[in-house]
Amino acid sequence: MKRKLVRDRTGNQVVSEATMYCIEPISPDDRVVYSDKEYAVISVLEVVDLDGNIIYYEVDL
Image (cartoon, rainbow, N blue to C red):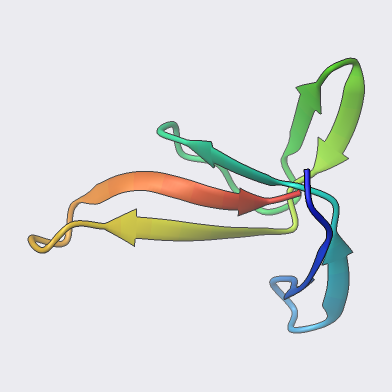
């Protein structure tokens, strides 16, 4: 749970309330529930290995 300034999929700057790491595919505008609070996914970064395989997703909420 850390606030930071990120860009959404349209390029607008918005404040991210938290960063989540997951192994399941997730898309911007999806919803995530954590500790009884719902968050909108702002941006998703695919983290890949040297072969180009996706290892995990870094998700800004």
